[in-house]
Image (cartoon, rainbow, N blue to C red; front, side, top):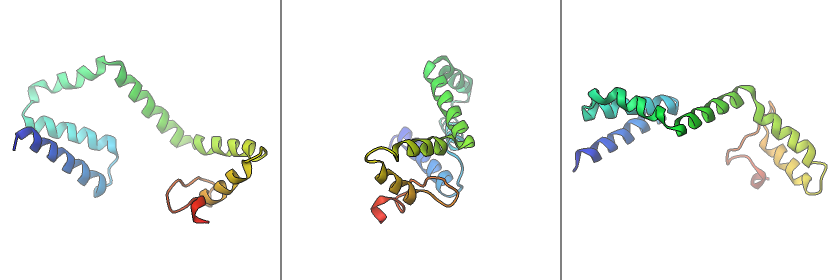
Length: 124
């Protein structure tokens, strides 16, 4: 078996263990997996190059901005507020009543919407 395939399997196992059992956030797991690949492959001499090269790509900044906006939306509960505003507008239009039913079934006691499969209009 090629050594690259063994490293890939090792990364998958490391990610699965840290995510499922250690319950760590995915950004921490990816940083640990990156260091794992560098250590296992013996590429310490190129570590700085591997860190600087992505910073020269515009996609890096787009991904970073997306994660920052996601964190802000999560911290400010903006998505639930937008959903409540949309439901207030849609509820007065034809076809809005079924949306209110979805709201009733998908909202928990604090007013947050639950998108899991155990709650929804199919469970009426």
